[in-house]
Length: 182
Image 1 (cartoon, rainbow, N blue to C red):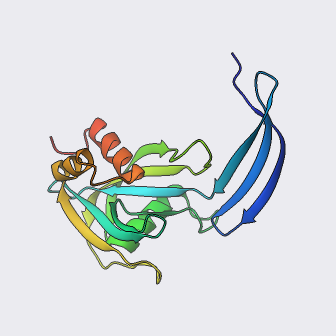
Image 2: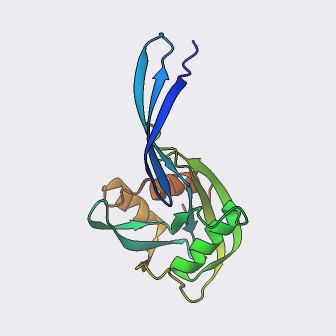
């Protein structure tokens, strides 16, 4: 069965720096029409830093939409132009938010945070063979570096203390690839 929906029309209601919001009308496979609310997003990168002792380096930061501090992997938007590759964006975010540089970057695939309405794609990497240095956060970025054993991060995910999707996906994929200590 062909499940593809055909866009009949679209209208933008908001166009910002990192996202646009539009309302589409689509033709469904059964011939009926339906509305689709779509948020177009520039996309991003998340990096799971794992130190030589098997600790995971996370950042704690206030997330305005939820009104709370979240513990998550270093991450950022793909908003520095076409000259910056996805891997370069990940390396930049890792350096800015943690001060670390990676001797080795391992791709962990991509994830779709909310495919029902959001076009955002988050590309994930593990950062290994870390060298520590000075943090270089953006002027509007306030982060605290938190270093935890991988097993504790997994336990926090199981206890629903870490809810950030990119962090959960990166941890799971790193575990499947054998990058986390047993």
